[in-house]
Length: 376
Ligand code: COS
Image 1 (spheres, rainbow, N blue to C red):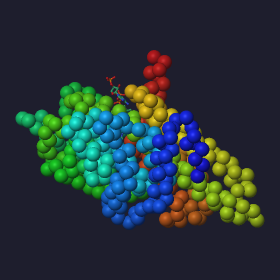
Image 2: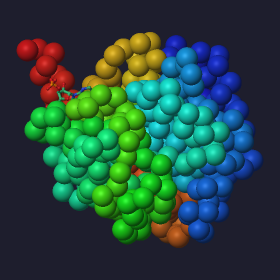
Image 3: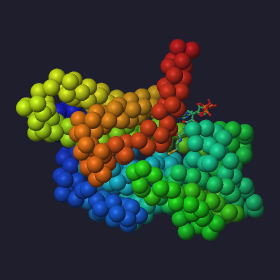
Image 4: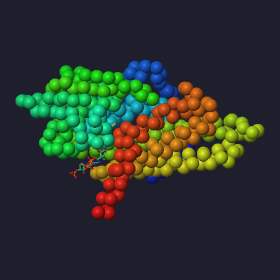
């Protein structure tokens, strides 16, 4: 794989070393067995923890999240195995709320997710509110000295969770709060398991009179919407990075195919039409990488908000990766759609990334509003 991007000024030596370490580990240990995704994910989390990579998924005491490190790990794991990327990514997103806004007591959980001892999740979406976060219905009512949570969350990856619920300080976006919920909490029910094109642990959850102490609240009452958006601002670039990993793998597979497959008495690569596709793919990969590492670097340099940069990185990288992979499938011919082939699995893996953590359509709304804000 072309690693010249690692010489870009966005990176420091520690990033180059991290990428090399993760790549070497992934080449030896991945892909994982995807037969039983629950068991595979548990093993992947334990293995990634034992290898020391999960400590990058959240900020330890006195540390700041290193978004460039997060992106490099995601793109490298995704290039080797989408499920390994998923297992790593959820430790980060699930604990992002605690990493960025948690108090000392809540941060004790972070030690467990950074070692692989606990698995985390992020419960924001609901049956009636996916893109429209301000419309959350799940309620948290203060009764005596407890919050009582009632409602549903859906499309939730993993189990022990940060839940966003309506505490009602004000209508809409200003009446939401975030809570830290250990998986064993009474009243938390897994109502349905959801199967998707690239399977991973996914469920609809129900909260029935679930009691939480006020100390479970992350941040201040009524701050939940802004907390969720700030967490997404950080992690959206990493979704782009995973898409980039998939696209890089598709490009590598295509180069290999074009060099080794003969057609009309010459390697496939000799066809100008194939060269045209490869040029488009290589250009998309580099342009996506520039947007992703621009966003990650900007955050790491201390920017309070990277809303525009992260939205651009996620939108461009995921949409273009879909195109890159589609071209790879085409150039692989029948092998491109053979179940179990690398490009066939990339074709399934990429699709959800254009939807989760803010669909492409939402990223366009975000980018347009940011652009308008700049000229107002
Ligand atoms: N960081 C910090 N604050 C933010 C923010 C961000 N990225 N984005 C918005 N806010 C603030 C706004 O500044 C505003 O605060 P004030 O009223 O004090 O000015 C408040 O939050 C409400 O913002 P806005 O009016 O833009 O909210 P909308 O309800 O119009 O929604 C979208 C905005 C659609 C962009 C938002 O709901 C979104 O990102 N949806 C996608 C959700 C998603 O990613 N779901 C996937 C779940 S995880 S798999």
